[in-house]
Length: 155
Image 1 (cartoon, rainbow, N blue to C red):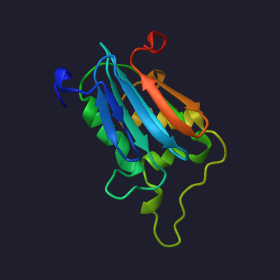
Image 2: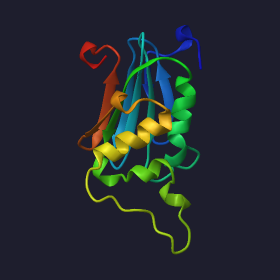
Image 3: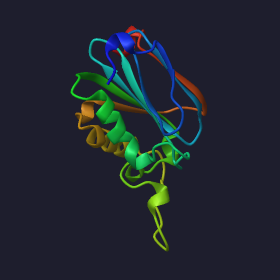
């Protein structure tokens, strides 16, 4: 974790990445289609964001590794909220525990049967070790997502 003065004001977080911005900063998640974004709001300001992809991008984190990396980046700092946004209907909550690419042979990954907002919230809560009440999940249309730490209604 970088010192607050060394953190950028803006970050672009692509599939399989985890990044952080300083208090008042902005995170952009480009081209969110079948993905989910997970943004942690830190007490006192600042954001830590992860872009979870259904399929691993070469050289980046798989879906079953992204929450551990996000939790590591947050460390022991206080969290005021966690926002999960994206293609909720494309995700089964278990993809945060076992990535689609880790299924072998005749073993098939579970298929989502609709928008399991509660299941995804539980998986993220457990993966980050945070209370379920801190996690919100929202299905949003495909495209770029921008999250600002400056929005006072989201604190």
